[in-house]
Length: 440
Image (cartoon, rainbow, N blue to C red):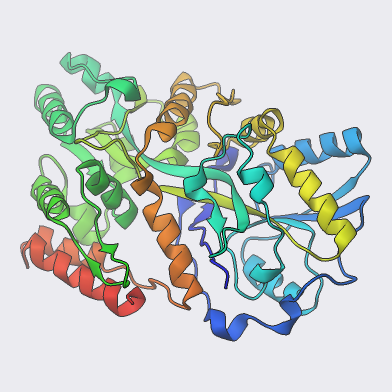
């Protein structure tokens, strides 16, 4: 039985950055493991000709184009790169699996039980110590077979209005090795707000992912399943969530984001907010959109855990269509994830790498954007393994034919912020929702 991972992001904006969007639930694994997903066949490419499917907006495929051209020049193997529209991509993959006409290599939005048992084992690539691939974000089946390796990763992070901090004369950390706690951050942000007459200290995405990251950093596990699949919350999570609800006082944080869906990014870009808790996908846009003040990415708070909520930006796979093409596909992917080649891919496409130690040089003119990417690349190796928990949990849910179609986090905490219920009651309702949808 295979483990199926879910990517929760769609390529938007310059440089391949992401805004997270929910994917439709994947149907039950038991009903989708069809005979068309069997072993090798006569379909697919050859040892000298492969087909590679991706899905990205025009201009954001620069890295893939560059690497395909370089591989063809070095090896003589023809790699046909096909850019599939995102809407309908998953359906096209399923239809191709049923028609026995899958590509040889693909960067997919999610793994799907209908074709997951036709995947090449990428363990030799993922486990190659030279590549330094972060094992927390590699999708494996129960036997340890590596089904996919991220093309890149996404992570939550903090942005500040640097101009306001400097105006107020308040310092902030610049290295993840010497970061601040949430308590220290809130104290500093409140001081900046008061001294500069800003409207709010912090805006915070109305996102379970961003809340998870904060809870992890405060030592909690958020809504976490035990070995039986039953969800609960620990004491550190309760304390963190109560703290978060208390921040929503229309001074430190505006209530309107989590209660009525106000846009926290727009608030931050207005220049009247001290800081914004969001993630790396904002960097490319802010490199061009923020001109009225100086901004900066700063290290994520640790209280006491150095963590984030990290997800696969894309999932690279190879298909076992026939012996010759499968061997050629694996050689191509092995070449692609060699550090020098993968670094070039990340630089051209604006990817946050899944490999450590690369220090990509991105083509941004914005010094703030360059510094932000440098910070994320320095931070990810320091994150506690819990940072990848939810990414892996989705893998197991889909395997069981389940999905969290309606995460109750936003609605329940909105009620708590509005004073309609306690934070502890909100958490209990969230736990109940998880148990009902993906428990067991």
